[in-house]
Length: 85
Image (cartoon, rainbow, N blue to C red; front, top):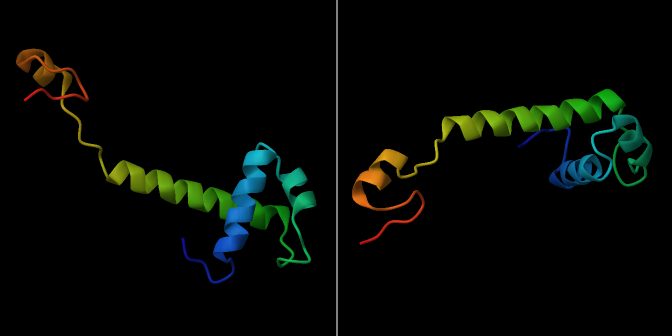
C-alpha cells in the first residue's frame, strides 16, 4: 500500500516487529529504530498496521477463490481440489 508518510522498507520493518513481538505495540515502539526511520508514536504504528490489515482483508473478500463445489465432485467422481480427466 502506498502512503506518502511511510516507505515500503518501514512498513516491512513494522510487520516484522509485529510478528516478532506478537502485536505488543509498546514493545514494538521501543524496538523501532529512530535513527534509521522517522520517529513514530505507538498510535502511528498501530494505525499503519491495522490500515494495511483491513485493506488486505477487504481485498481478499472481494476476490473469491474458485474451487470445484463438493457436490459437483461427488456427482462426477472427483474430490475437491483434484480433477480427473
